[in-house]
Amino acid sequence: MAMEASEIVALIKAGLPDSEVTMRDLAGDGNHWHATVVSESFRGKSRVQQHQMVYAAIGEPMGGVLHALALQTELPKP
Image (cartoon, one colour):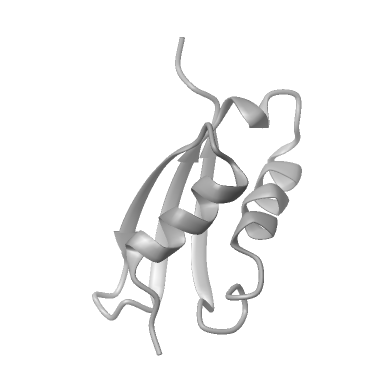
């Protein structure tokens, strides 16, 4: 069972309310996603910590219903 992009975005935004999230379906099957997440909350955090924050926001679906997510995390541009 695949997850819709809107579901993933909602989970990320619930955990990181200041974030802007852009999703791309990598395989056209709704199972392989790329997310670009831009958030001020990432300031001062390592790339690994930023990704952990996104995975924590997604929670239980990660590794279950959502099994393939490529992440790009960024700080907002000035």
